[in-house]
Image (tube, rainbow, N blue to C red; front, side, top):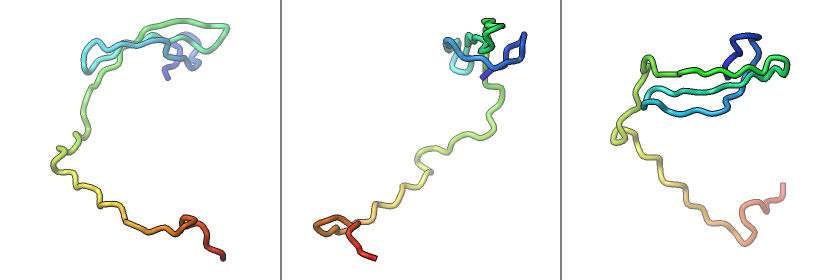
Length: 79
């Protein structure tokens, strides 16, 4: 959400498109019915704080535990 530059109310994204892999252009419309302004913004990546790990360095999840269920599943226990 982006604030309206005129009345400072919230606004909705009406449409957007990528100009480059790291820059997006978006059109917004103010939610304030008395204002209803429409404006355009550009959003871009300024700095990467942490890169993802290479896929080969991420450990695989453990295999699922195998369980045998009785005729009624596992929810038939009386307590």
